[in-house]
Image 1 (cartoon, rainbow, N blue to C red):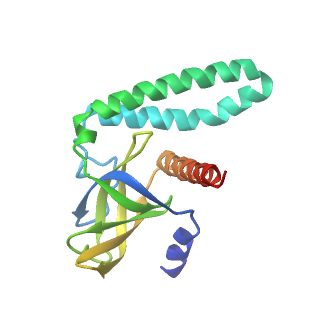
Image 2: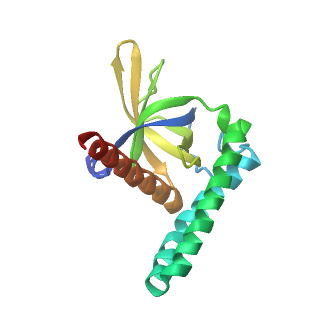
Length: 192
């Protein structure tokens, strides 16, 4: 347990605004299981999520093409940006995504911390529907409540991801890296 918590502290963490919905579970259920609470998500949510996964999986191929032919790689990057833009437009119009409450969270590849009006039970299992912005990457995740702290009549719940696919972990890592790069650029712009 202590090693598990330490492993998750090794990930880079960011404070971000996401769309999130969660539900307690009596046992750990993988997001691809039929009994998963959010298995009835819209087809749009699933397609947008799949587009993000395919894009993440294609990045190493694009880097390889870039080493061989920069013009072809630049053209493919432009096509990818157009596809991403279309994906964002579809996601912004999706009722399934638009209806999710947005909330400030602390996020990493290994877990998430968020506030709630009621405490979540330590050791309890949780299903999470998460959408990252501005990419609109959507994920269905399962986790365990590591701790819950009370602050000013609100509760900060710390969740470790228990069932997370490699593609979702890669999407989270990419999001964290891009967020940090954006923050650095903003700080540099302010100092100039």
